[in-house]
Image (cartoon, rainbow, N blue to C red; front, side):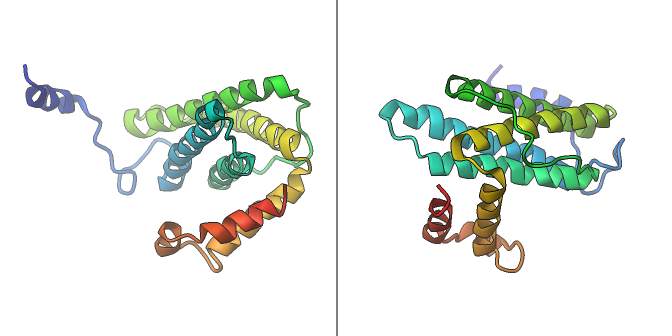
Length: 196
């Protein structure tokens, strides 16, 4: 069997699903949920890249790490809005120690993978989305992410405001694909650096 034959045989079992047009097993499943679950995981990769790949060269950019953690919470906000789930307050962080930061980042990764896996199984396998389990994972994700941000940068509410200021600089009115692609990284970085 050559690779082309393998592909032809493999795709025979592919779940072909269009999230925009297909009915789902949950009213919460839609393109916003899929968007947030996938991109949350890509932000985690950017945190790993900043912390563990650049760490080897002693070149960790903590401003970038904070930005990526807030990007995780930005997608988290989409998930919560989609689920109409707002039972969170800033200031409930878990006390952590420096030696535990990496463990928390890995646990945040595990939670985002589990959230993505739940969404995938519900969308593509028609498995019922366990909303209570999803909310439990979201609660843990919020607490861990808030704790890391608070530990590394202090006041969570102040850094939340800085994150929104960065987003307003990027999208003064609302999202646009043009502004997403052609970002003013210098302005965004300046905003982030004012809140070290």
